[in-house]
Structures are given as structure tokens and as C-alpha cells.
Image (tube, rainbow, N blue to C red; front, side, top):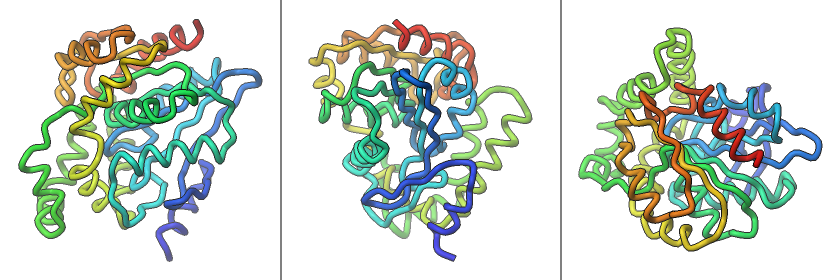
Length: 281
């Protein structure tokens, strides 16, 4: 069975064919409500929004989707760089005929994607919300090694998979049920061919490093934006919030005490309230 056939068997979501393959998404629409598009990060698929979509969809039309190489979207044999992810978002908005401009929410690497998207297509975007955005960490030697074909695969199989799972479980909160469910999601998507290659390629080429200039260019635009950050984030540390606001001065910072990197999941009620207030005004 082909990878696409495996992915399409998940009936909970909808699927659309884009230029680089199938994108899995969920659409919740309210009449006359603006669309909010949720963009996840490096390794956790769109299930990271599970604790946000029910509440936010009471007030807004929502789209959440799996980035290429994650969840139930295709794993194309391509370079997983910023161009790929920005093009996926652009095509998804176009193919689904979403009314413009849309509102965007980017979590971690998703923040870098929506920042670059908005720089390229400013007329397509209304408001922006960032949750612990990535894109300015230094590409370490280990990350470079993991981007190499043979060495990267060895590192990934030796401890990379366990590290990814351990990392997300430590950020989503203390609920045993939530942790078991998220562990199952990770183990499931890791079994689909192409996930490993997608992660390794993203570590080497993706929008997790070197995006400072994109944020600076975004800051020259005039629009409304909010920045949500957990003060206990040890993936993209909270102290980066000061630098992001220097680059994008129109962002309003909402710091969350005891919040981790997946603060939208861990402290969902607080984040939902912030997003609701921001997009409603």
C-alpha cells in the first residue's frame, strides 16, 4: 500500500491535493466569521491544537492542517525548507477558497512559517498571533550532522525518536491520559514512511534557524499582532521574547507563568482566552 493510501484511511479529517502531495486538514466554519488558520511546529502534527479548536470554533471559522512530512499529510521526497512550507500554506488557502484576508496563528516553527508567509503575501493576512515562535536558534553541529543522509539516520534511530517523544511529553502538562494519547500519535506518525526523512531535512534546511531578517521585515509592516510565550519554555526560551518584540514592535506580549513550549496545550484555557480576545476586537 502506498503512503498516500495509508494516510487517506484516516477518516476523521479532510484531504486536499496540492502541488507536493496530499495535505490533511480540518475545517470548522461559522457563517460570517473570519477564518483563523493554525500552523503547528517542527514535529508535533495538528493534534497539538486539540485543546484549542473546540473553544475557538465557537467564535471563529478555523483551519488546522498537518505540515508536509507530519501527521497524515504526504511525505514528499523534497528539501523541507521555508519555501516548501510557505507554498503549502499559500496553496491550501487558495484551493480551499478561504475568504481573504485570513488570520494566522503560528506555534514554534509554525511562527516562522507564518512570519515568512506574511512578508511574502501581506495582502492575504489580517492579524497574526505567535506562540513561542522559532527561527532564530543557532544551527548546532548535531543538527547539521542529523541533516546528513547516513549519519543523520543513525543518530535519529539511536536516540532521535526517543528525544522527540520525550520532549513533547514534557511540555504538554501532567495529565497521564494526554501523555499517553500524544505518545500514541507520535509512534503512529513515525511508522509512516518518510517522517524520519522529513524531520532530518527540516533540521538541516527548515525555518528553525536564520529567520531573523524575516521577522525584521515583518516588523516594518503595519498590522495587529500578539505574542504568547510560556516563561518556563526550555525549547525556545522566554528571553527571546524581548528580541522578537524588538524586531516586530507591534506585537503585544502575553507571558504565561509556568508555561512550557506547548503552552497552547498545557495552559489551553489561558491561551484560548487570549486568542479569543485578540481576534474578536
